[in-house]
Length: 201
Image (cartoon, rainbow, N blue to C red):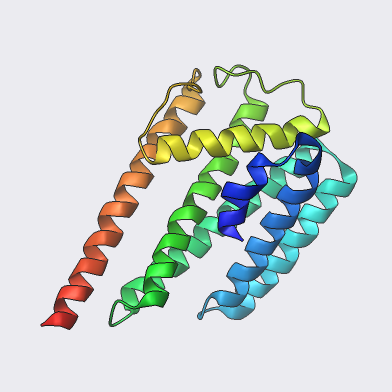
């Protein structure tokens, strides 16, 4: 579901984005709540609340509801990333499940940061060098598609430069995104290598 949200949904026609983005986000939230081993009751409750808020945001079509919904989704994805990293750290050996958790956490952190970038792009005038306004319903999801692309390009420090931050808020977020990407890779690789080495010994 995470990979579909990142790789398949963005290539869909603009008219389908308002349908498929919420469906994919809801699926990712529910799948994450069911896959985590610890605090399952909290995660299932959070998934139900976030799915309901996402449905309300779609039906009401109000900008402030959309912002609250995206903010809570971003916070929840970060909580899931922390839970996945905790499970990786507590595992005794490196197996397929640990590697899948590490990859999933990497992508979920990128999605969480892209939600923050989308909120900034929608709320701060001229935050980026592309025009994401006026905020008609489909363009909200276009901005999510553009900001997901921008976030992962920054996250991996590729930096094509076709979208660049132009406001203090977006530049500060760009620093946070690139730092998170590099720190995550450094920490997780060190953790996995340490476990693999100790298991080999």
